[in-house]
Length: 245
Image 1 (cartoon, helix red, strand yellow):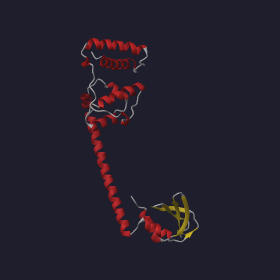
Image 2: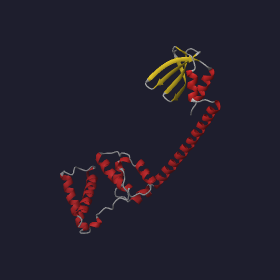
Image 3: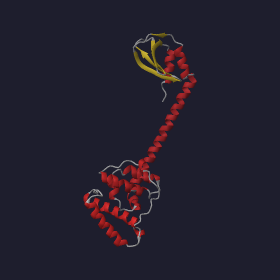
Image 4: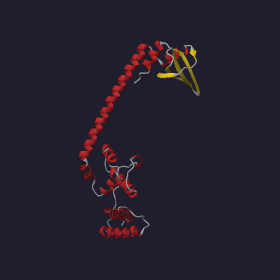
């Protein structure tokens, strides 16, 4: 007789019996746990005799990385026991979407504990309507994301075409700013655009003076602030450049 398999089955049966009786599993050092374990061990030994294969649990079909599963809620015992049951049940399910559905929707340890004796095919059959609804919503969400991504891609392509047609580049904007005369800072107003090239980051603002633009520039650790004469051509290019979707 395989005593290790018999002991493992007795430990599992002990935990289930104590949970059903007390709503939690006492420490393995407690008298309650020891007494129940002795009863379960004796019952299993009498029931199965020398047929150790009857009490040997089948190995899981696939290893489950518990670190990637959502945390369960509930009492410490429900969480600990539920996590163990969840890993074993998930290993019996070959379909990745079905496993994902279960871990997303069964987040309470009690759900796994209460269904521990229900065969996995039965659990999945009962949950089939909810699974089909979840799969439908997930498909709709994926389709919406695809439509949104295409829309954003189209908007970005149109924006880049406008910049190209207008001959606007970050380097060109910085060259225009560098070519302008500089004056003392003035009170800033609305921001026109941010322009970034290698080693330089410029933020350009309207100011309280309608004839000046304020530039806040960062070059590595250095920060500089100055105004330049307002040029309507430069302002128009900055506004178009700032329209990036």
